[in-house]
Amino acid sequence: MKLLRSTLFEIAYWVTTLFFGAICTVLAIVPGKRLLGYGIFSYARVIAFLLRFVAGVRIDLRGTHHLSHIPSVIAAKHQSWGDPLIMVATVRPLAYVAGDHLVKYPLVGFILKKTGAVVLSNQGGEAARARIDEGMRRLQSDRRHILIYPEGHLSAPGEKHPYKKGVFHLAHDLDRPVVPVATSLGLAWDRKAFIKRPRTVVVEFLEPIQPGEDKDAFMLQLEETIEARTAELIRADIGEA
Image 1: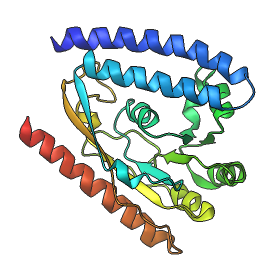
Image 2: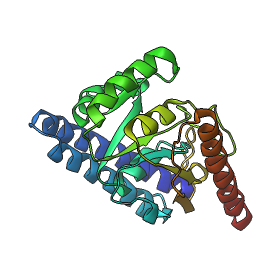
Image 3: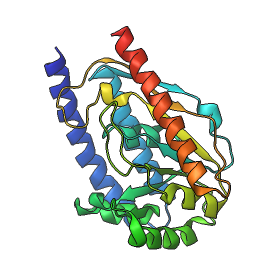
């Protein structure tokens, strides 16, 4: 049954992606970002619907009250290709910090640029910092929440990569709180596996953290907060399975 549901989801996923890819390409030509933003939001909502009713993966959203009307930087754990789609389907309005690996896909770079995304190298360093500086100038007057994955990589459940300090510079320079996000989505939608595992997984928005002036202290607190809560969610899920 899991194989059948996963196959049907995969077919529906790619048909939906191609369909909305064409629509969003047209919307990207239209002046302004509103229509394109609505197109991307609609795409993410359809995928979330397919994930629930075709693949059998239910998303338990928690802590959304931490997303106030004040724009924040959302720093999320990244376990699955479904992570950004769930974020786009949940948080409005939303801007993105995206890895440069996405630009290699046809038309994706064009659409990302039109949304005002800040595209960074996953290697970090001075080049990434320069891109953040350039993106910061565009984001100063942008009242959207900003999504960033501090690790810059997908991580298997229980795995982590070093957190990059771009999240601190982003929040500090824009004077915004950081909302950490823990998740167990990788237990259902593995980053490498074809099979989607029917179950309820959690995406949890945590207590906001102010960036302050101490970069190292902030990064330590952010990493410990996300990793500790993610580990708790994974243990709870495995314990119930």
